[in-house]
Amino acid sequence: MELILAAAIGVLAASGVYLILRPRTFQVIIGLSLISYAVNLFILAMGRLRMDAAPILDGANANPADYVDPVPQALVLTAIVIGFAMTALFLVVLLAARGLTGNDHVDGNLH
Image 1 (cartoon, one colour):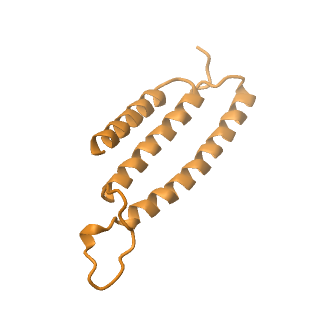
Image 2 (tube, helix red, strand yellow):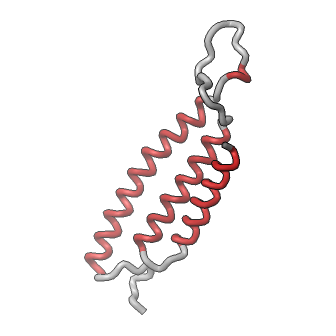
Image 3 (cartoon, one colour):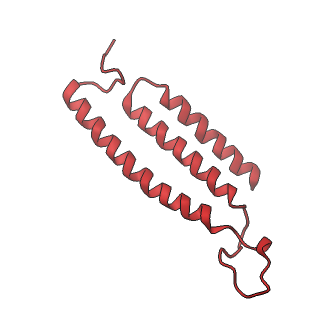
């Protein structure tokens, strides 16, 4: 599972960097979104990858090694919500800039 997650993080980050370097603003926005997804997966992986483990300790004799850290999960959930809001804001700015300039190049020039 760790190998698949590491490969997914690498593919998302590489695709995001590739798209950020493109001249169109829509591609830049999608690239930023892919990089944010890669960062979210990385933070989630830092909370220890375990299947069917409880995030909340119960009882006095609980072993902390048997549980998953819930803090990275809460941070990633918050980051996902903020990421959606920022992507929506960027898309609105993209549409306004396209309406004003007539193109969607990053520098505003067609050449």
